[in-house]
Length: 125
Image (tube, rainbow, N blue to C red):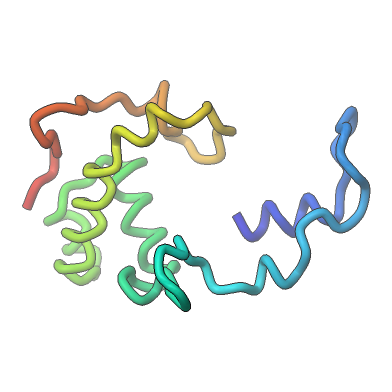
């Protein structure tokens, strides 16, 4: 996402109706990510650092790897289990949102259809 923000600030896509130049201020890019559900909350208060979380999520979503496989790659079991639980618990939200751009080999939506009922999680610990 950060690379996409930097790219957009440097390019006006052909045929785009938006403004040229800086669209996403640097202060927004530099701000620690947060769901902002509480004052001064940061995502890293309850999630692993993004470099680890990104790798865990890629393994869960794109590789459909199970927990043992991901832990075998050197990731902390508790972090993998928590990421898996959060991912599958929020599956219903992906059906409520408008379709977004496909930025990875496996996009949420058409490429990844999972049941929403009965607490389905194909890789429960």
